[in-house]
Image (tube, one colour):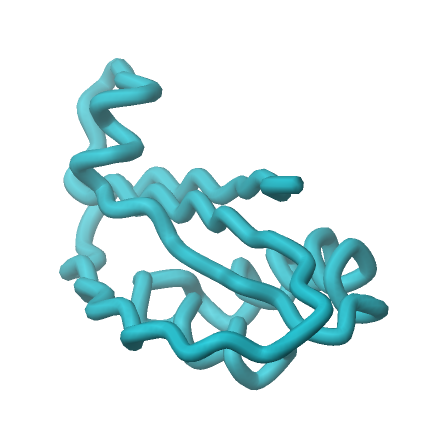
Length: 101
C-alpha cells in the first residue's frame, strides 16, 4: 500500500513531504485490511462537489481526494489514469479521503 500511494501521490503532484503526511494519516486506517480498493477523484469531480475560492488566487491548485474500500478478496480493476499538474508559483495543496463501507 505504501509504494502504491507513493507512486500515485507523486503523479498527482504531491511532494515527498506532502505524500509522507498523507500516508502517515491514511496508512493506519488501511494497513490491516487484506485488500484495499483505492480510487482518486478527478479535479473536475472535486471541484464540482467542493468548490474552492482562495484570495489571492493561487497559481497552482492541487487537490487530492482518495476514496477507498476494505476488501476481503482481490478484484480486477482497470488502472486509473491520473494527471500530473504543473506546479509553479503560489501553490495550494489540499488532500483528504473517505472510506466506503
